[in-house]
Length: 502
Image: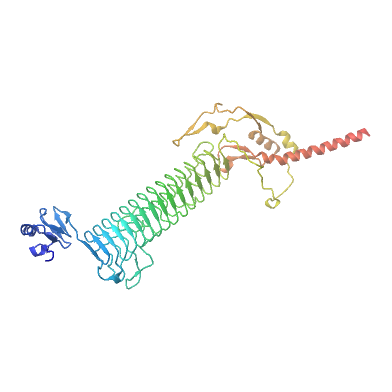
């Protein structure tokens, strides 16, 4: 004797969710006990719950609330296993040519449409969770675990006959977490681990997203504007690469490269690193809050390594910052927001404008094995002439002894990112005397003689800070000229002496 399964329709039930079927189920309960009742996937409007029998595959509607039947039929066939309301509903269990084999779907609507294209259905998929891989038709070798994981994955059907293309579209994806890779349609080889990981990816390939909201994107139901088509991105951490829809970016750390839209070839590591960057390319940022405020577009080829390195830069390109807070402030202690082609090496290294190299802070002594060479090739020079700066210029210079009392030392960068500017009262004065020139006095000599000395630089003239500097190597040529001038005088005096001796 086979298993007897009761059909509610035989007892007068309608199963449309509108008409009251309560009396039909009262009759079933009065006449049967511990029997299988197949609800046929329908919804039955009733006024109470029923529990004397084993109700399968359907819903009860009580006080406008839907309650699933306590049991669902597990179906197996053609090496498939499906369990849950409407799980694997379209899969053919006998027609092996369909390709719909070796699938596992557990949960309501899991793999619901797999096999709806009878020519070639998806195969070797594992879907666990409500609506996991719900829309899949031809995708294969996918793993989806979590509520709505890979829900919209289809594969790609491209010809007029509706036959699927088997070129890996919608295949070999791994989604673990609620809504992970939810809107993926035909992307292949993607990995999403965590709630909403790679949530909005639609056609992009070989993306890896690890962490809640990693590479997620904001999606309006039914809208296409926020769906992602980019490929080969790697996002690790909460909200990393959240808005990115461009290729070959790497973001490691919570909120890293969060606002990026179209920037490519960026490598970002650290909490909120490059957070505001939207359309900048070839950035390398390693450390918490590095390049955090960078915005706009065209800010390419910046390298920041160290906690809060280049922290406040908004506009600028081709800069390199190595060290804690390197190139985060200018020499006056103000946030460095706009600079290009500058280099800061060392903790809290600061520059005063564009195209500068700063080695360390004010307390650093620079050592080198071997002399630093300057370019001096004739082929790199133009308008060559004998220098006009000689003995007269040198004689007017005033060599000085002094102790350093750097303004920089009165600007303290605090660990919380704030700046304390102290009064310059001599308390930071160094102990040892040094020897050199005073830039203001050199400028006075230049004005008196109406000459230009290339070793003097006023950084305000290049949109920099109010800093005057002297390039002492540029004194070499005037000193040589002064010696030559003196030698001419000495030789002339020697000739006069010889004449007098005669």
